[in-house]
Image 1 (cartoon, rainbow, N blue to C red):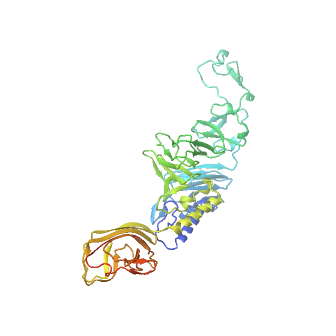
Image 2 (image 1 turned 120 degrees about the vertical axis):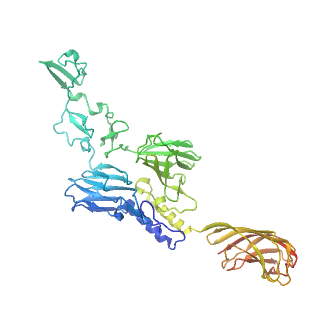
Image 3 (image 1 turned 180 degrees about the vertical axis):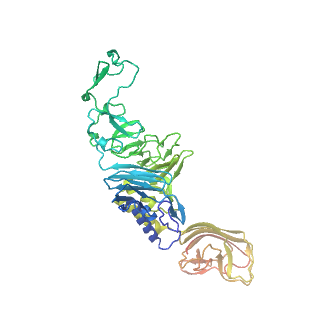
Length: 540
């Protein structure tokens, strides 16, 4: 049985019996992969996760360490009997207040400090993530700052020489090639201001610093003085802005905003820009179709791993497409279009010029949406419990409603129950059909305008060559037009009726107040011309 490429969930095969069992199992597996947590006891040292543990849990809670330990994840999984590289988003919690946990695939590593939780993304080439500490409401709670302020009164924050973090330091008088004992040079040294004072005596330069005259927000790479909205936030380095910003505490990378903001687009086309990032919704309000373009990395250097939320706020259906050279992937069976008004979706930059699209997407015609297409990550998509239940109901309904579909042509024939010496040449002999489930619809045109020659033929006139044998319920089929030298004997209606279990049927003449009968050699005498056009509809 085929499996999905990321979570190795069994897929429903065409015509599979008891398909609901596979669908239910797939939904259960998806729920586990997105919600279940696994307690990892590390009291015995390093722990290696199995493939099933890695794919069927989203949070791995590590505890019991007696040393800094490794949590090893699989660097390949088995899908359809073949090894593939995992593509996985997951969480790791380190409950220890003493020892760290390092997540590794044997080559790549990501360290999680004490009492912290990390959101990780792994694709076999990269192991990236962000870390949230339990208490990061102060500068000293961050991972790249001093642990406390003890003994640092009046000190400054300085980036370390190895650029690995910041430290508290005192003022250093640097060699500027001037005589620092000459008060005329004090201004050159920028000491003649409200913050610093300077005096010289005996060749010694004394610098006075008034800490009441300066705050951390006066520094060039610090944000403006905070207000009530920044209460409880921490200083985080923003690499794009090349400065510190106030934000919720986290690991490396960009600081998340305090709340989501909306970038509302009213036109029919839009290309993502660098400021479209985590925490920003891009909405589309136009009543006409809208095209969202994912730019190349050369045009807009959006960081790999960035997640952007899309909202079809208007009636115009939103289509997502990559610019030339950009690869866009989406779930099997899903198109690159949002399904309807108020549909939400997410684009994730997974590589330099590679993006992934997930969410409430329109399904590709002729395919069946599965749980991974419809009920995606409920923790980030904003789906309510009712929305999730509706998605599950849609999966079940779609599974039950799936029917075979086929189109084609066939060659109709003319015969009697007993052909005898029947002889003729076809002048028309075409037919087309559409099968939907166990129902067949079509049209046929068959005739012998040169006449049917026979002396020993007998029985019902048979119109044959139907594409499928008729079931027990044939139904009535209109003979739209029948031309030729046919005697109806006072009957006013002519119907084509396929015979159960056969690929042929007869033309039945009927009328009000008279007994109906199937046309036979008596009504189509030797030498009589015949042509009939029939619309067919019958069950298998």
